[in-house]
Every structure is written in structure tokens, then in C-alpha cells.
Length: 408
Image 1: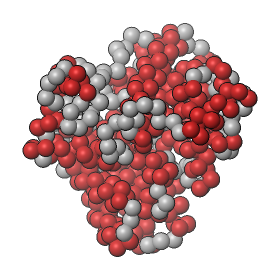
Image 2: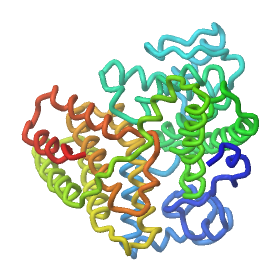
Image 3: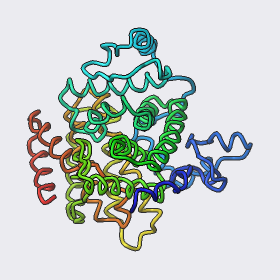
Image 4: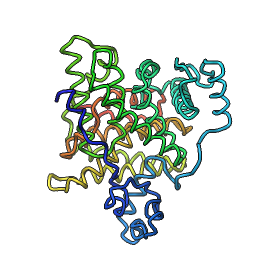
């Protein structure tokens, strides 16, 4: 696919697979507030979510998505920034130097050129990365493994910065339930898409880094299939262009070796993983884990069982719903879990099971292309298993999981 084909693609659709049917008919973005979304409230109609409870299964799907991704309550209004965060940003603007609150991560930019919200989202992402580095866990999630490669590029590119800010805003919204952060994410996404089109229209060798960063982030965040295919093909076109002109920056190599997917869709591997997750569940029940740890494991098991039941005849929209949920889990569940929980062993086990389910599920569905390009799940899984081995707890569970993933 030539790079120029990105110029005329339509904007990302506003519909979500879990949005209410009224918003879908109106072609509006649903905020997915249960049991009454904002759009239905605005138009003074009864939201279809109101009737979901009695039907059981649809409600189960909505609650499963919200619980897996850490959204346990309705969205909260207002800015999500603490007084400490705002004080750090004011200092950053005054001195021009990123405060030490960002830890070992330093983002070199001119703070006067950015808004307070921009700097808060950058500072939050830097603080999260510093926390993971301090714990030795920064190579175990999709976002944190890419972030060091993003930072040098966003400092000199507004295109890459807008993509990065959309990613940070999404993470903040998923943790704080902030409606303001979610709206900022949509705004940053739109700006990044506009900037990317301009970049592609006059594409030059020096645009490679910023175009790849923005394309990767937009691919991770968008939900509708046509736009996802556009970004996927666009990334491949940029990589092909880099290869043909002999220009291969460091970020190129990081993405290039992850764009081909292994053939690992054996049904028995997925079934064995489900069996092992249920054994792990019994271990957790004896340990009285944090509430969200057990809840996420139970719902990951339910998701894996749904994936294992997929057949070629399964409707495409049902397959897409499951794959979309799986994608979102891979991006946010490992990151938010490691940042928020004290029990790293159980969190790492859940992450390892999640990566294993994803790798085996890629052969279970005709919608496998929805699993992202550029995400090196085998490496993340290997790093996670090595970290679990260092903790040295419940060796049998680790050995069984290692045996399951050995064919991958």
C-alpha cells in the first residue's frame, strides 16, 4: 500500500462495539455510562442500557469490559490532576526543566509551548515509567516497552506529541474514570490524525520517526476495522519506504521485527491455558488477594473460554467484539496492574496468562488482523516469565505455563 493512500482515508468512526444501540443508530460516540448514557439523556430518551439487565449476557459483556480495564464507576467530571501534579507543572513552566517528580525520565521540551493539561499528561506518563523502571518492570508491558523510544521523538514533533498525549490521556481516563481525560484523548486523537495526513502529503526521510510513533499510537487507540486496517497498512508502507531508501532509524528496527505474526493458533494450547488459570484461581482463593486481582482473573478466564468457542461460522461482529476486548486488555491491564497493585507475583501471572491467551487466540479467529502490528507479545511473555521465576513462588504453576508456551 503506498503511503499516499493514507491522505484520503475517512476519519475514525465514532461507534464502539459496546456503545448503546441508540448512539449507533445516530452515529454518535457513546460514553458507555451505564445505565443511561449522556447522549440518550440529552435527547430525553430511555437508553437501551436500561433494558440490558434483564437479558443477562449483554450486561455480562459490558461489566466484563469495564472490570478488565479498571473502570468500576461512572465517569467523573473535572480535571483529574492533584495539587502536587499542578505544582510540578507550574515549576516546569517556570524553570524550563522537568521536575524530579518525573524520576529518572527526562523529557526535553519547551514547556511554554504546551498547555497545563499537555504537561500534566506528559508528566504522568514519565512518572509511571519511572515507577516501573524502579521496580524493574518496564519491559513487561506494551506501553512501557515503547515509551523510551517515543520520548526523543515527541520532544521535536507536534505530530508525535499529539499521539503520545492521546495515549497518556486514555491511560489516565482508564484509571481515574475522568470524563475530562477521555474527552482530551479524543481531541488529541483528532489532532494527530490531521497532522499525520499533512505529514504523509509531504513525506520525507526525516518524517519517519514521527509518522511511525503517531501511526502506532493511533492504531492502538482506534476501534473500527477500516481505520485500523488503514493505520496497519500505513505502518507497513512506511517500513517499506525506509527499507527502499536505506534509512532505518532505531525506532524502525523496534517495529520492523514485530510486524509478522507467528502461527500459533492451536486450540489445545488455549484450553490448557484455561485449565492452568483455574488452578491459579484456587491458589489465589487461599491467599485472599486484592479484590480486583481475583475479579480480573475470573473475567480473563471467561474471555478465554469465549475465544475457545469461536468457530469459522461465528458471526464476524462477535469475533470482533472479543478481539477488541483482548486488544484493550493487552494494552492497559498489565500496565495499570503493575502500577497499582502491591502483589506483583499475582499481577505478573495474570499478565503472562493474558499474553498466552492472545498468542493462541490469534489462530482462533478470522479477525486476527485486529491484534496489533508492532506488539512483540512473545518477548513480553518471555520477559514476564523470567521475572516470575526470580520471585520463586509456586514453581509448578510457572513450569506448567512455560510448557504451554514452549511451542510458540
